Image 1 (cartoon, rainbow, N blue to C red):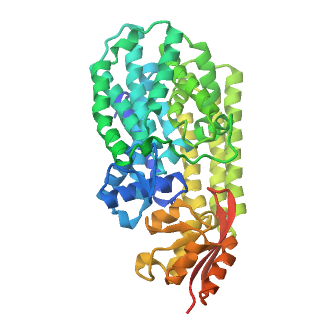
Image 2: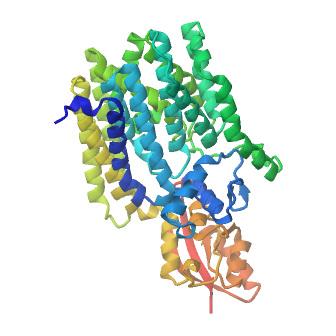
Image 3: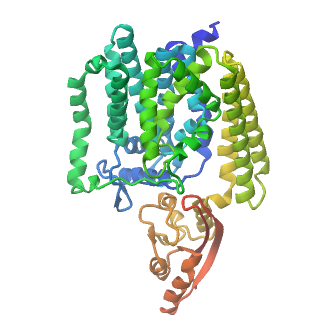
Length: 541
């Protein structure tokens, strides 16, 4: 029988950590409804790419997604073609590339962390990152973020091997150079030049700390840049020509309202949970071992980019996902590498308990606020109890940091809490999913064009969330009262918000017609952060 240490050494540790993360992410991937807005827009663009057999243009309905790179859409289209079909609109099929991204992210984190900080630290960093709320949410959303973080992790892990070899006078492996460029090119094809900015900031920071550039000449620039141009160049030329240069006129992204400078740091403990107890250990270890290769690389990757992202307007939930790799490395190394003082251990425990209690309160508040039927209290109570238990387990791991099993126990409880929240609590909050309710209403009222029960396409006035387009098709009409009235005049169903009802009725009365309400929904639109009151109308007989 193999010892526990042999299970986390070499490729076995990376594979085991990735398997743990994937197993924990699967339930949410299958059960969680389509999330507005980034996921719905992204998945719809992939569906249109598949429907239209056009791998160049990336569009949401007729709108060009300026600045959006193709690789994640290609993978989603391939995933849907292999496991489902575009007309089915099964969101889990679009999420499979994100699940693959999480596996690669975790495996690369383990590999790079093991080279810089030892196998125990590398394995722990991968497991805690992969089972964190950040890691699970990356896998549960059909966007480019998980794939970008994975590609960045492959690049950073390969560079960790090269950089450590330079500092220690070791042998430079060609495999690491190849993986470095594979990761960089993949990241470029997933999200564009942002990987060049991250790499540039890291390189400049390392040069400033090391005061030499010897490692810079060993990256294989000649063939690496040629490979980058060969892989990305043809698509960039094709999309520039096909869109008459409109592709370069600025990218669009959904940001969280009310966010600003410091918001990214504020939500970091919740995203890292249950591994949040690593944060004080990361800071202490980075300060004590600041002259070592591992700490210098981790700090160079983490700090400049984190500051830059904090200064940018708005906040995207997973915008800093790739930076958490270095944070997990430093925290795991500080936890397992050497003795820590009481202040660090108490801080780690306090942050863990506080974050667990906060997540428990959020679980209960969600049911109180968005579950009119009060059917979700049991699930919310279980999620809250597990979150508090995970916080306490994290505190125990912080107090006795040499016990790896305590950290893994905290990870297990945290995963259980996250699964309860993602699989039981959130999908059951009907008022929080307007599109899901509207789809049910269309079907129940016998006016759903997808089943041939009525003429299509559906029109909407006052509600324009991308998830509606994803489920009903690219021909769905998003507009104003005139758009909805035209649909009703054409004997098609229309979704109308309360503030548009009077205008729709006025237009119909001018034609001597009226509409009947076949379904009504009162809920909350999380993307707009406001209540919604929607009706499904059809032409009165």
